[in-house]
Image 1 (cartoon, helix red, strand yellow):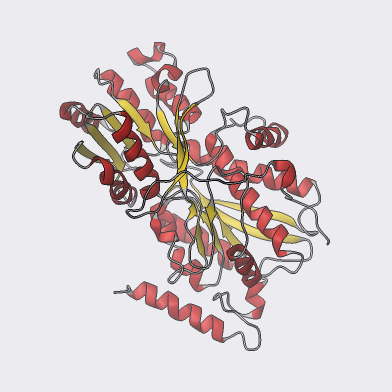
Image 2: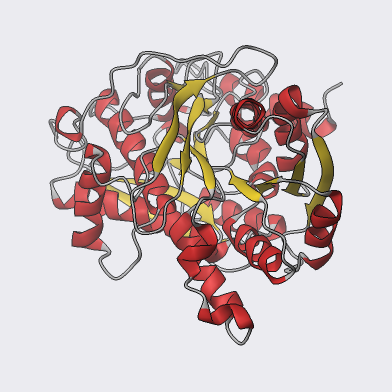
Length: 439
Protein backbone atom coordinates (compact mmCIF):
# COMPACT_ATOMS: atom_id res chain seq x y z
CA UNK A 1 0.00 0.00 0.00
CA UNK A 2 1.27 3.47 -0.81
CA UNK A 3 1.83 5.81 2.11
CA UNK A 4 -0.31 8.99 2.41
CA UNK A 5 2.79 11.08 1.68
CA UNK A 6 3.46 9.18 -1.56
CA UNK A 7 -0.17 9.56 -2.62
CA UNK A 8 0.02 13.28 -1.86
CA UNK A 9 3.20 13.63 -3.92
CA UNK A 10 1.60 11.78 -6.83
CA UNK A 11 -1.43 14.08 -6.69
CA UNK A 12 0.85 17.11 -6.63
CA UNK A 13 2.62 15.89 -9.76
CA UNK A 14 -0.72 15.32 -11.50
CA UNK A 15 -1.97 18.79 -10.57
CA UNK A 16 1.23 20.46 -11.73
CA UNK A 17 1.10 18.57 -15.02
CA UNK A 18 -2.52 19.52 -15.57
CA UNK A 19 -1.73 23.19 -14.97
CA UNK A 20 0.54 23.38 -18.01
CA UNK A 21 -2.26 23.90 -20.52
CA UNK A 22 -0.76 23.66 -23.97
CA UNK A 23 2.75 23.10 -22.63
CA UNK A 24 3.51 19.39 -22.31
CA UNK A 25 4.73 18.17 -18.92
CA UNK A 26 4.73 14.41 -19.12
CA UNK A 27 7.48 14.15 -16.51
CA UNK A 28 5.57 15.96 -13.79
CA UNK A 29 7.82 18.98 -14.18
CA UNK A 30 5.20 21.62 -13.40
CA UNK A 31 3.95 24.69 -15.28
CA UNK A 32 5.61 26.17 -18.33
CA UNK A 33 7.21 28.81 -16.10
CA UNK A 34 8.42 26.15 -13.65
CA UNK A 35 10.12 24.24 -16.44
CA UNK A 36 12.79 26.93 -16.80
CA UNK A 37 13.05 28.01 -13.16
CA UNK A 38 16.69 28.66 -12.34
CA UNK A 39 17.68 29.12 -16.00
CA UNK A 40 18.65 32.44 -17.55
CA UNK A 41 20.43 33.31 -20.79
CA UNK A 42 23.79 33.08 -19.06
CA UNK A 43 23.26 30.97 -15.91
CA UNK A 44 21.77 27.72 -14.63
CA UNK A 45 21.32 27.48 -10.85
CA UNK A 46 21.59 24.07 -9.23
CA UNK A 47 21.72 23.08 -5.58
CA UNK A 48 22.63 20.32 -3.17
CA UNK A 49 22.44 19.41 0.51
CA UNK A 50 25.71 18.16 1.97
CA UNK A 51 27.10 17.32 5.44
CA UNK A 52 29.61 20.15 5.67
CA UNK A 53 29.44 19.66 9.44
CA UNK A 54 28.27 16.85 11.73
CA UNK A 55 29.15 13.14 11.95
CA UNK A 56 29.32 12.49 8.21
CA UNK A 57 31.38 15.54 7.31
CA UNK A 58 34.83 13.86 7.52
CA UNK A 59 35.46 12.72 3.99
CA UNK A 60 32.07 13.60 2.57
CA UNK A 61 32.82 17.32 2.80
CA UNK A 62 35.07 16.72 -0.21
CA UNK A 63 32.20 15.62 -2.47
CA UNK A 64 30.90 19.14 -3.08
CA UNK A 65 34.46 20.51 -3.21
CA UNK A 66 35.20 18.13 -6.09
CA UNK A 67 31.99 18.99 -7.91
CA UNK A 68 32.60 22.71 -7.52
CA UNK A 69 36.13 22.38 -8.92
CA UNK A 70 34.76 20.77 -12.09
CA UNK A 71 32.10 23.47 -12.43
CA UNK A 72 34.76 26.15 -11.92
CA UNK A 73 36.78 24.53 -14.69
CA UNK A 74 33.75 24.50 -16.97
CA UNK A 75 32.82 28.11 -16.17
CA UNK A 76 36.41 29.25 -16.77
CA UNK A 77 36.15 27.73 -20.25
CA UNK A 78 32.98 29.54 -21.24
CA UNK A 79 30.29 27.42 -19.60
CA UNK A 80 27.81 25.21 -21.41
CA UNK A 81 25.83 26.64 -24.32
CA UNK A 82 26.65 30.12 -23.06
CA UNK A 83 25.59 29.43 -19.47
CA UNK A 84 27.78 29.25 -16.39
CA UNK A 85 26.79 26.79 -13.66
CA UNK A 86 25.86 28.44 -10.36
CA UNK A 87 26.32 25.65 -7.81
CA UNK A 88 24.67 26.28 -4.42
CA UNK A 89 25.80 24.03 -1.54
CA UNK A 90 23.83 24.04 1.73
CA UNK A 91 24.97 22.34 4.94
CA UNK A 92 22.44 19.93 6.47
CA UNK A 93 24.84 18.42 9.05
CA UNK A 94 23.49 14.96 8.08
CA UNK A 95 20.28 15.83 9.95
CA UNK A 96 16.99 15.14 8.10
CA UNK A 97 15.23 18.06 9.79
CA UNK A 98 17.95 20.39 8.58
CA UNK A 99 17.84 18.77 5.13
CA UNK A 100 14.18 19.70 4.88
CA UNK A 101 14.91 23.31 5.83
CA UNK A 102 17.79 23.83 3.42
CA UNK A 103 15.99 22.04 0.57
CA UNK A 104 12.94 24.25 1.06
CA UNK A 105 15.25 27.27 0.83
CA UNK A 106 16.96 25.94 -2.30
CA UNK A 107 13.63 25.23 -4.00
CA UNK A 108 11.54 28.21 -2.98
CA UNK A 109 13.97 31.03 -2.19
CA UNK A 110 17.00 30.27 -4.35
CA UNK A 111 14.80 28.71 -7.09
CA UNK A 112 17.20 26.04 -8.24
CA UNK A 113 16.72 24.36 -11.60
CA UNK A 114 17.75 20.94 -10.28
CA UNK A 115 19.08 19.16 -7.19
CA UNK A 116 22.44 17.46 -7.80
CA UNK A 117 23.93 14.78 -5.57
CA UNK A 118 21.96 15.36 -2.36
CA UNK A 119 23.89 13.26 0.16
CA UNK A 120 22.67 10.65 2.60
CA UNK A 121 19.93 8.06 2.90
CA UNK A 122 17.90 9.37 5.88
CA UNK A 123 18.52 12.95 4.81
CA UNK A 124 17.45 12.64 1.19
CA UNK A 125 14.49 10.43 2.01
CA UNK A 126 13.12 13.39 3.96
CA UNK A 127 12.88 15.55 0.81
CA UNK A 128 12.43 13.19 -2.14
CA UNK A 129 8.65 13.56 -2.26
CA UNK A 130 8.82 17.34 -2.07
CA UNK A 131 11.34 17.53 -4.90
CA UNK A 132 9.28 15.27 -7.15
CA UNK A 133 6.03 16.98 -6.21
CA UNK A 134 7.47 20.36 -7.15
CA UNK A 135 8.87 19.09 -10.45
CA UNK A 136 12.54 19.58 -9.50
CA UNK A 137 14.91 17.12 -11.26
CA UNK A 138 16.59 15.17 -8.46
CA UNK A 139 19.79 13.90 -10.05
CA UNK A 140 22.49 11.47 -8.94
CA UNK A 141 21.59 11.07 -5.27
CA UNK A 142 24.65 10.41 -3.11
CA UNK A 143 23.49 7.22 -1.46
CA UNK A 144 23.23 3.56 -2.41
CA UNK A 145 19.66 3.15 -1.14
CA UNK A 146 17.11 1.56 -3.46
CA UNK A 147 14.64 4.41 -2.90
CA UNK A 148 16.06 6.49 -5.75
CA UNK A 149 15.27 3.76 -8.27
CA UNK A 150 11.47 3.97 -8.11
CA UNK A 151 10.56 5.73 -11.37
CA UNK A 152 6.83 5.10 -11.00
CA UNK A 153 6.71 6.87 -7.63
CA UNK A 154 9.64 9.27 -8.03
CA UNK A 155 9.96 9.96 -11.77
CA UNK A 156 12.43 12.82 -11.27
CA UNK A 157 14.87 11.07 -8.87
CA UNK A 158 17.92 9.20 -10.16
CA UNK A 159 20.54 7.19 -8.31
CA UNK A 160 24.27 7.54 -8.83
CA UNK A 161 26.47 5.22 -6.79
CA UNK A 162 26.08 1.46 -7.02
CA UNK A 163 23.29 0.45 -4.66
CA UNK A 164 24.09 -1.26 -1.38
CA UNK A 165 22.62 -4.62 -2.40
CA UNK A 166 24.58 -4.86 -5.66
CA UNK A 167 27.82 -3.89 -3.96
CA UNK A 168 27.28 -6.33 -1.10
CA UNK A 169 26.52 -9.16 -3.54
CA UNK A 170 29.88 -8.68 -5.24
CA UNK A 171 31.59 -8.52 -1.84
CA UNK A 172 29.79 -11.63 -0.62
CA UNK A 173 30.66 -13.66 -3.69
CA UNK A 174 34.29 -12.54 -3.51
CA UNK A 175 34.61 -13.42 0.18
CA UNK A 176 32.93 -16.81 -0.34
CA UNK A 177 35.39 -17.66 -3.11
CA UNK A 178 38.57 -16.26 -1.59
CA UNK A 179 38.02 -16.82 2.15
CA UNK A 180 36.25 -20.19 2.14
CA UNK A 181 35.29 -21.43 5.58
CA UNK A 182 36.11 -18.15 7.33
CA UNK A 183 33.59 -16.71 9.77
CA UNK A 184 32.25 -13.29 8.80
CA UNK A 185 31.10 -10.43 11.01
CA UNK A 186 29.04 -7.45 9.83
CA UNK A 187 29.22 -3.92 11.21
CA UNK A 188 26.67 -1.60 9.63
CA UNK A 189 24.91 1.75 9.94
CA UNK A 190 21.44 1.42 11.46
CA UNK A 191 19.44 2.86 8.57
CA UNK A 192 18.68 1.52 5.07
CA UNK A 193 22.37 0.64 4.68
CA UNK A 194 21.95 -2.42 6.91
CA UNK A 195 18.95 -4.23 5.37
CA UNK A 196 19.98 -3.44 1.79
CA UNK A 197 23.55 -4.64 2.34
CA UNK A 198 22.38 -7.78 4.14
CA UNK A 199 20.10 -8.59 1.21
CA UNK A 200 23.18 -8.77 -0.97
CA UNK A 201 25.89 -10.37 1.16
CA UNK A 202 23.63 -12.98 2.74
CA UNK A 203 22.96 -14.52 -0.68
CA UNK A 204 26.52 -15.88 -0.57
CA UNK A 205 27.50 -16.02 3.10
CA UNK A 206 24.38 -16.65 5.19
CA UNK A 207 25.89 -19.78 6.77
CA UNK A 208 29.22 -18.03 7.47
CA UNK A 209 27.98 -14.84 9.15
CA UNK A 210 28.47 -15.08 12.91
CA UNK A 211 27.78 -11.49 14.02
CA UNK A 212 25.53 -8.59 13.04
CA UNK A 213 26.51 -5.37 14.83
CA UNK A 214 24.93 -1.98 14.10
CA UNK A 215 25.92 1.56 15.00
CA UNK A 216 24.16 4.92 15.16
CA UNK A 217 26.01 7.62 13.15
CA UNK A 218 25.06 10.13 15.85
CA UNK A 219 26.83 8.12 18.58
CA UNK A 220 30.62 8.21 18.04
CA UNK A 221 31.66 5.00 19.77
CA UNK A 222 32.07 1.37 18.78
CA UNK A 223 33.63 -0.30 21.82
CA UNK A 224 30.80 -2.75 22.40
CA UNK A 225 30.34 -3.63 18.74
CA UNK A 226 34.04 -4.41 18.19
CA UNK A 227 34.13 -6.48 21.37
CA UNK A 228 31.22 -8.53 20.00
CA UNK A 229 32.91 -9.04 16.65
CA UNK A 230 36.02 -10.29 18.40
CA UNK A 231 33.99 -12.53 20.71
CA UNK A 232 32.18 -14.05 17.69
CA UNK A 233 35.49 -15.17 16.21
CA UNK A 234 34.84 -13.42 12.87
CA UNK A 235 37.90 -13.79 10.64
CA UNK A 236 36.54 -11.29 8.11
CA UNK A 237 34.91 -8.03 9.29
CA UNK A 238 32.76 -6.25 6.70
CA UNK A 239 32.14 -2.64 7.70
CA UNK A 240 29.17 -1.01 5.95
CA UNK A 241 30.28 2.24 7.50
CA UNK A 242 30.96 5.85 6.61
CA UNK A 243 34.69 6.76 6.81
CA UNK A 244 34.53 8.12 10.37
CA UNK A 245 33.23 4.80 11.69
CA UNK A 246 35.48 2.61 9.56
CA UNK A 247 38.50 4.42 11.00
CA UNK A 248 37.06 4.13 14.51
CA UNK A 249 36.39 0.40 14.04
CA UNK A 250 39.87 -0.41 12.76
CA UNK A 251 41.56 1.52 15.57
CA UNK A 252 39.34 0.02 18.28
CA UNK A 253 40.01 -3.49 16.96
CA UNK A 254 43.75 -2.90 17.07
CA UNK A 255 43.50 -1.65 20.65
CA UNK A 256 41.95 -4.94 21.83
CA UNK A 257 44.15 -7.21 19.74
CA UNK A 258 41.51 -8.07 17.14
CA UNK A 259 42.98 -8.36 13.62
CA UNK A 260 40.38 -9.54 11.10
CA UNK A 261 40.53 -9.02 7.37
CA UNK A 262 38.64 -5.73 7.00
CA UNK A 263 36.38 -5.24 3.97
CA UNK A 264 34.81 -1.85 3.18
CA UNK A 265 32.36 -0.55 0.57
CA UNK A 266 32.93 2.32 -1.84
CA UNK A 267 31.04 4.82 0.34
CA UNK A 268 33.26 4.21 3.37
CA UNK A 269 36.59 3.05 2.01
CA UNK A 270 38.21 6.37 1.12
CA UNK A 271 41.63 5.33 2.42
CA UNK A 272 43.21 8.77 2.66
CA UNK A 273 40.31 10.08 4.74
CA UNK A 274 40.21 6.97 6.93
CA UNK A 275 43.95 7.28 7.60
CA UNK A 276 43.58 10.95 8.48
CA UNK A 277 40.81 10.10 10.95
CA UNK A 278 42.80 7.25 12.48
CA UNK A 279 45.63 9.70 13.08
CA UNK A 280 43.22 12.05 14.88
CA UNK A 281 41.59 9.29 16.93
CA UNK A 282 44.96 7.81 17.93
CA UNK A 283 46.28 11.04 19.47
CA UNK A 284 47.13 10.47 23.13
CA UNK A 285 46.90 6.67 22.86
CA UNK A 286 49.61 4.01 22.36
CA UNK A 287 48.58 3.88 18.69
CA UNK A 288 49.76 7.43 18.02
CA UNK A 289 53.27 6.12 17.33
CA UNK A 290 52.02 3.81 14.57
CA UNK A 291 51.85 5.36 11.06
CA UNK A 292 48.13 5.64 10.13
CA UNK A 293 48.74 3.94 6.78
CA UNK A 294 49.76 0.78 8.62
CA UNK A 295 46.20 0.36 9.87
CA UNK A 296 44.71 0.32 6.35
CA UNK A 297 47.42 -1.73 4.66
CA UNK A 298 45.61 -4.77 3.23
CA UNK A 299 42.13 -3.28 3.53
CA UNK A 300 39.86 -4.73 0.82
CA UNK A 301 37.60 -2.17 -0.86
CA UNK A 302 34.99 -2.22 -3.60
CA UNK A 303 34.86 0.66 -6.08
CA UNK A 304 32.84 1.72 -9.13
CA UNK A 305 34.85 4.85 -9.98
CA UNK A 306 38.55 5.38 -10.70
CA UNK A 307 40.38 5.79 -7.42
CA UNK A 308 42.50 8.79 -6.42
CA UNK A 309 45.52 6.52 -5.97
CA UNK A 310 45.25 5.04 -9.49
CA UNK A 311 47.73 7.33 -11.23
CA UNK A 312 47.54 5.44 -14.52
CA UNK A 313 43.81 6.03 -15.01
CA UNK A 314 43.14 8.84 -17.54
CA UNK A 315 40.18 10.20 -15.57
CA UNK A 316 42.15 10.27 -12.32
CA UNK A 317 44.90 12.19 -14.14
CA UNK A 318 42.31 14.62 -15.57
CA UNK A 319 40.66 15.21 -12.22
CA UNK A 320 43.98 15.64 -10.44
CA UNK A 321 44.81 18.43 -12.88
CA UNK A 322 41.52 20.20 -12.07
CA UNK A 323 42.11 19.65 -8.37
CA UNK A 324 45.59 21.16 -8.53
CA UNK A 325 44.31 24.21 -10.37
CA UNK A 326 41.17 25.00 -8.36
CA UNK A 327 41.37 23.34 -4.90
CA UNK A 328 45.06 22.67 -4.42
CA UNK A 329 44.89 23.15 -0.64
CA UNK A 330 42.24 20.42 -0.21
CA UNK A 331 43.15 16.71 -0.24
CA UNK A 332 42.60 14.74 -3.44
CA UNK A 333 40.59 11.73 -2.29
CA UNK A 334 38.14 9.15 -3.60
CA UNK A 335 35.25 11.29 -2.35
CA UNK A 336 36.71 14.26 -4.24
CA UNK A 337 36.60 12.13 -7.38
CA UNK A 338 33.03 11.07 -6.52
CA UNK A 339 31.85 14.69 -6.63
CA UNK A 340 33.86 15.37 -9.77
CA UNK A 341 32.16 12.49 -11.57
CA UNK A 342 28.71 13.76 -10.55
CA UNK A 343 29.58 17.17 -11.98
CA UNK A 344 30.94 15.56 -15.14
CA UNK A 345 27.75 13.58 -15.76
CA UNK A 346 25.62 16.70 -15.19
CA UNK A 347 27.78 18.73 -17.58
CA UNK A 348 27.55 16.01 -20.22
CA UNK A 349 23.78 16.02 -19.80
CA UNK A 350 23.56 19.79 -20.30
CA UNK A 351 25.72 19.50 -23.40
CA UNK A 352 23.36 16.87 -24.80
CA UNK A 353 20.24 18.94 -24.04
CA UNK A 354 21.53 21.89 -26.04
CA UNK A 355 20.82 25.61 -25.64
CA UNK A 356 17.04 25.22 -25.17
CA UNK A 357 17.16 24.09 -21.56
CA UNK A 358 14.14 23.19 -19.44
CA UNK A 359 13.39 20.54 -16.84
CA UNK A 360 11.28 18.33 -19.05
CA UNK A 361 13.87 18.26 -21.83
CA UNK A 362 16.60 17.56 -19.30
CA UNK A 363 14.80 14.48 -17.97
CA UNK A 364 13.86 13.24 -21.42
CA UNK A 365 17.47 13.63 -22.57
CA UNK A 366 18.79 11.83 -19.50
CA UNK A 367 16.44 8.91 -20.15
CA UNK A 368 17.64 8.49 -23.73
CA UNK A 369 21.43 9.02 -23.54
CA UNK A 370 24.36 6.85 -22.57
CA UNK A 371 26.44 8.64 -19.94
CA UNK A 372 29.49 6.41 -20.30
CA UNK A 373 32.56 8.21 -19.07
CA UNK A 374 34.51 8.17 -15.83
CA UNK A 375 32.72 5.20 -14.25
CA UNK A 376 34.19 1.69 -14.38
CA UNK A 377 30.78 0.04 -14.93
CA UNK A 378 27.69 0.90 -16.99
CA UNK A 379 25.46 3.74 -15.77
CA UNK A 380 21.69 3.20 -15.86
CA UNK A 381 19.41 6.20 -16.38
CA UNK A 382 16.37 5.35 -18.47
CA UNK A 383 12.64 5.86 -18.10
CA UNK A 384 12.34 2.52 -16.31
CA UNK A 385 15.70 2.25 -14.56
CA UNK A 386 17.05 5.03 -12.34
CA UNK A 387 19.61 2.92 -10.48
CA UNK A 388 22.89 4.57 -11.56
CA UNK A 389 26.12 2.56 -11.56
CA UNK A 390 25.64 -1.18 -11.78
CA UNK A 391 28.59 -2.94 -10.18
CA UNK A 392 32.05 -2.71 -8.60
CA UNK A 393 35.61 -3.93 -8.78
CA UNK A 394 37.46 -5.38 -5.77
CA UNK A 395 40.82 -3.88 -4.77
CA UNK A 396 43.32 -4.21 -1.95
CA UNK A 397 44.87 -1.10 -0.44
CA UNK A 398 48.67 -1.25 -0.21
CA UNK A 399 50.52 1.29 1.91
CA UNK A 400 52.65 3.54 -0.30
CA UNK A 401 51.60 1.82 -3.51
CA UNK A 402 48.75 1.90 -6.00
CA UNK A 403 45.76 -0.28 -5.07
CA UNK A 404 46.00 -3.89 -6.22
CA UNK A 405 43.04 -4.92 -8.37
CA UNK A 406 41.88 -8.27 -7.00
CA UNK A 407 38.85 -8.61 -9.27
CA UNK A 408 37.98 -6.60 -12.36
CA UNK A 409 34.63 -4.75 -12.31
CA UNK A 410 31.54 -6.94 -12.46
CA UNK A 411 27.87 -6.04 -12.67
CA UNK A 412 24.72 -7.48 -11.14
CA UNK A 413 21.18 -6.60 -10.08
CA UNK A 414 19.66 -5.80 -6.69
CA UNK A 415 17.91 -9.16 -6.42
CA UNK A 416 19.07 -12.72 -7.05
CA UNK A 417 20.61 -12.34 -10.49
CA UNK A 418 24.08 -13.47 -11.48
CA UNK A 419 27.27 -11.44 -11.01
CA UNK A 420 28.72 -11.02 -14.49
CA UNK A 421 31.76 -9.66 -16.31
CA UNK A 422 30.98 -7.22 -19.12
CA UNK A 423 32.44 -5.30 -22.05
CA UNK A 424 32.22 -1.52 -22.11
CA UNK A 425 33.95 1.19 -24.09
CA UNK A 426 35.04 3.79 -21.58
CA UNK A 427 35.78 7.13 -23.27
CA UNK A 428 38.77 9.19 -22.17
CA UNK A 429 38.44 12.82 -21.01
CA UNK A 430 39.64 13.96 -24.44
CA UNK A 431 36.65 12.21 -26.01
CA UNK A 432 34.02 13.84 -23.76
CA UNK A 433 32.71 17.40 -24.23
CA UNK A 434 32.13 19.15 -20.92
CA UNK A 435 31.83 22.76 -22.02
CA UNK A 436 31.25 24.96 -25.06
CA UNK A 437 28.40 24.81 -27.52
CA UNK A 438 26.41 27.56 -29.18
CA UNK A 439 25.19 30.34 -26.92
